[in-house]
Image (tube, rainbow, N blue to C red; front, side, top):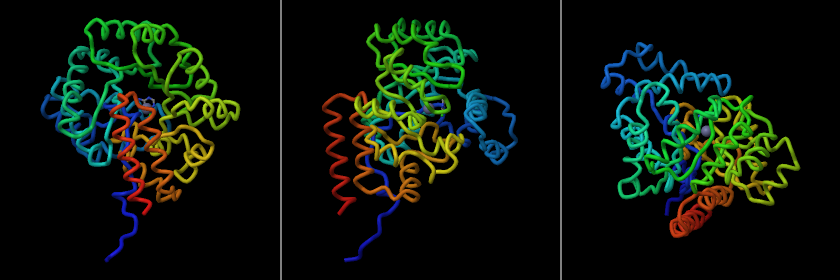
Length: 341
Ligand code: ES4
Ligand code: ZN
C-alpha cells in the first residue's frame, strides 16, 4: 500500500473557533461585489490596489482598513452573505463549532440599523448546523475606543430587541483603553445572563489580563499572549485553566510577534495554559484556522497530540452545550488516532 506523509489537509483537527470577527472575514472579492451591488464607489481601482493595503504595522493600522471596508455592508442580505461565505470556508477547514463576534457599534455609528446587522448575521447562523455542520452562537463585541455609555446604550438595545446573543466581548484599540473602563457594561451583561469574554494582552500589558479577570469577570481571554511576561499570571491562568484564544497569523501580521517561529504558542502549551488556535480576521491576516495550523506545523513541528490538545481545549472552552461538546471531543479523539497512526 502506498503511504503518504502527513498532508496539509490533516494538519488541522476538527475544532471550535472561539475568536472570529465576522467583519474580518470580508474578502477583497466580496468587498468589490458588495460595492457593485450597493452602488458604492470604492477608493480603490481594483483588487490589486486594495490588496496592496494589507501590510500592517500594528493593530491600529489594521483597524483603519477593517473599519473602512465595512462601508460595503449595507443590507441584511449583505451581512447574511458575509456570514455564509465564512461558514462555508470554515467548515471546509475543519471548524465544527464557531462563536462569532460582531461589532454592532461599527455599523450603528455609520447609520446601519442595529436590526439590519444583527438579524443578517443571525439569520445565517440559524441554519449553520444543518447547512454546514457547524454549530454556532453570536457574541456582541464592544469597541473599547468608544465610551462605556455607548456600549451600554447598544447593549440595552440588544436586550430590548431580544437579540440572539450568547455573550459580549471587548475589542478594537487596546492600549489606553483598559478593561477597567467597562466594569458597568460587564456587570449589566452578567445580570442579563450573558457570557463574557474580552481581548486582553494582545498589544496591551499583562495587567489588562488581570483586569479582565478581576474587574470584568470574563470566562475567556482573547489573545492573552503577553501573559508570558508575567510568571505569576501564567501560574494563575494555568491553575484556573482560563481559556486563551490565540491567533498566531494575526499576531504576526499585526507585529505582536516578529515571526511565526517566535510565536509563544508552543511555550504556552508546554506551560499547561488552556490555549486554542483561532483565525481572528482571516480575510486580513492570511488564513483561516486550518491555515493557522498548517503554518504552525510547518514551523514548530507540533505533534498530532499537541494539535489534538489545542482542538480539545477549543471544544472544552466553548459555550456549546454539553452534548455538542461530547460529540466534538469524540471527533477530536478520532482525528488524533488517525493522525498519530
Ligand atoms: C481585532 Cl485582531 C483585533 N484586535 C482587536 N480588535 C479587533 N477587532 C477586529 N480584529
Ligand atoms: Zn480579535
